[in-house]
Image 1 (cartoon, one colour):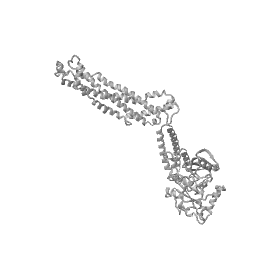
Image 2 (cartoon, rainbow, N blue to C red):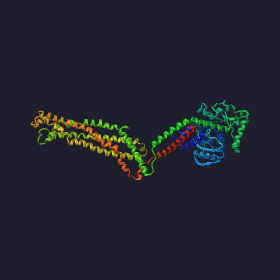
Image 3 (cartoon, rainbow, N blue to C red):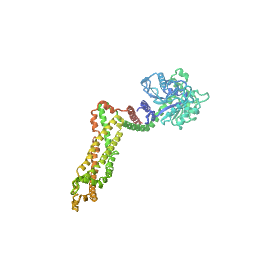
Image 4 (cartoon, helix red, strand yellow):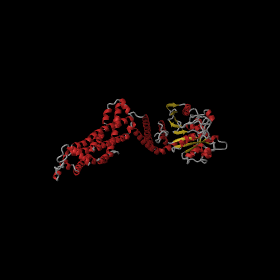
Length: 610
């Protein structure tokens, strides 16, 4: 099984390469979930010397004041014995450094590229991987040294800026704090202990390291601190003896320095009983074992985060839609598929799967009947109007039995007024269909992705609905016109019965135009008109559904499909002209999803092998 720390290192490098380290994303990051070790200490506390002792190489910039001005994410990877050691920077992915003096120079140069040749700091980390047979698998984050006073060339806020940067790392619950404290300094004034205690009051995440033990005043020692009596942490304090500045100037190598360190603890009476857990070599091995143990304990949480993030990434990618096809055939196919998706959503609104289609029935069940009831037939059938139309229909010769032409004129003039409610019903359904089209367009995610296609589909659907409205209006008004053009014969055959019931056809013209006679005519016409209204109340919806609703379901975009087959490549491309920001976002999410799926497989494999 791949070493857990190596696996985490690999995942962290991939996260960093994709920018997946919590700085520019709303989604939870895998980087933050993976345990790491942050090295914290005040300026001149010996942080750099500790790191170099752990690595066994001189590779960090040195000097007075703030030397570490950017976080350095240091990943140590153990390789086979006999292999040549080398270093790689994430910002120079294909360049291997075998001279660690060049590594020091690149750290300095990369820091200056970000901050300029000033004493400013930056929270943008430098990522360095060192491959060597002489290291343990380990990840360390070297943070700028805490300071109490801004020096010349530094802003007054630098003290707080550095503290905030350090806190942003060590506040994370998965961060192990390596607190570097000089033994020749009062523990109560230790910057590392002070800030560690604030974020980890129980000391469960803090590992204390005492430096400069060999530089303590004569007659004093660090036994109380190393035994945990001065300040107790969950894990034992570790003492180290770093190279002196004179050793560094003389280029004393790390092998000799480690040997001298072992001899110091073994031969110094005060520390002899602690020698087995003192020194840089022990520190490196202990940190590696501890980090691996923490990673193992965190695997369930890491798996949960990975699964949750994969689901969120898949949802986001689905929302953004598929990438654009390159060839014309692919573009045409993509357009057709998007249009079919839109068409299906539109049909679902009509069929009740989605809301909105019920409003069409409301037009037929409420709006149309109410409009028919509001028709003022009483004006058409007032005594004056009946007398006027009957008289005009008789012409120079009065009717003999029943004023047939008068009836026809009265009925036709009344029925003509039904055209208004019929047209209004057609327009109301047209408006509702347009609303459903806009809803379906807004619910078709792919149309949000391609504004040009959205405009084309909207226009095509609107044009189709307009043609359907005109056809529906024509057919619906024909129903009304048919009722006007041919009256029901059976209805008129009832009229002569008035004679059999005692009517006298020989009455004078003046008797025939009396109020009683005219009221009877008005009542008969109103009865017939109401019968026709009842019929049209059912036939008008049928016409509208057949010409508009059914046709919209069947062929809303048929004309558009015929037309796009004739479009040139440039026109097709313009329809699929996607926002570059969306394309970039999709590409980044796809890479991130690939990373998380790979991490999921590797973490799951590691979990099964535990």
